[in-house]
Image (tube, rainbow, N blue to C red; front, side, top):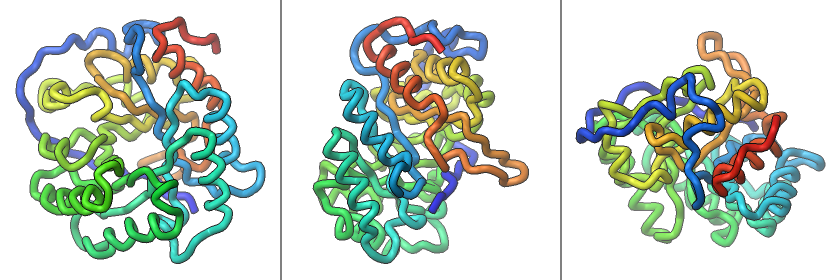
Length: 294
């Protein structure tokens, strides 16, 4: 089953901090302002496709084996959550991917912390992922449809505390899809602070109202960019993420389309056509090298 990652608006002010924005401007070269040396990026994949023979799950495992220098984490989503029972196809795909060096986190919908699902249902989904697919294979959880408002912060603190209470090593990735109130940095290890089209990401800027992001390492922020048509556009989006202004450590870029106005398309239905080029670009940025040609 494919599910669309949902973004919402809003956010709150943070403490003042001046960071140069030139490198992350829409006009920046895709080869400009890349962090030299050290790991700049790891890849977060919304793997919302079924693991049939020849599927992109096999491609993920092949990539993890072929390029061990790039860390890849796949978001598992059997049925807008763990589903009602173990799926042997997912068991096989997860085992192949994790044995190749990848990591898997389970998708959990929270509907912005209000209404359904209740906290009890969220906990049940978390428990079922671990029961169905094993703690040895599930490295954490992707908390989708996360609110960005301070009023809902208590709900997400309970979710975070529940996960960490099961195992403090479990990763919590929250997805408000936008820059949230500063307190959300304390209820997730990583936050997806941008989800949307590449054209909009070119102008993404935490300053001045969300300067709290600079108080944390860049792994605190993730971006999920779609409608990045062509390899040069993909590289430009990664360059923007690597800038001092954007300060982002988790990335994913795809050429698949989604039209927000008409709710048409699914950007997470497959890996992008330039998947291998994306990994090569990430690897080059992490090593401080020139980007591969498109």
